[in-house]
Image: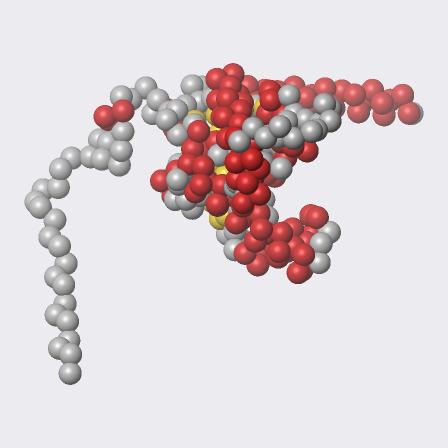
Length: 273
């Protein structure tokens, strides 16, 4: 009996594997030409989970925190040194240390003390890693300013995941086993760091809708539904890759209005008494 169950289970697992691979191949064919999806997310919005599910559905590589490991390897520094700069703005201490280093003081130090990792060095290495992953293709990249570093690539879909703050706090409480106050502080700190990082490093605001092809609110749409919408939009953008840039835009295929649209009249302002 046990052997029969094992055989039946093995066959079922094989069929399921074939079905999964077949679905991944079909998805890949539909999104042919598209090479990257970037996922920007508010902390606690479920963006990382959506990215993982999307990568599994597409059969693509998920690139999230391992970016830090690649940057550390590229620079020859420890993970701890790289993590100190991950999606965080340059602090006042960083600027002070950089200034001291620039003065090249001949201070007596142990030879085994690693060199300081400057924020600009980390940012340059991060850009190389992200662009290298995009060049390899078939990747879902979570955060790390990818929506800015890859904004000139037409074969990339840029997605922003948001949710109401209270719901994000509840999400973090459940996922990270934190009390309300600690979760609230963590959400606020993470959001502030990511916002300031993009502002200081790239002079853009993370909430600028023009950085993204779509913005999804997980307070209104479930995670699986978000994955479906992203996959569908990936196919839709892939279908437009053949169009020249000048043919893109909301006016594609639309005729001119039969007559000039009229502006709504501006009501008279009440006279001040």
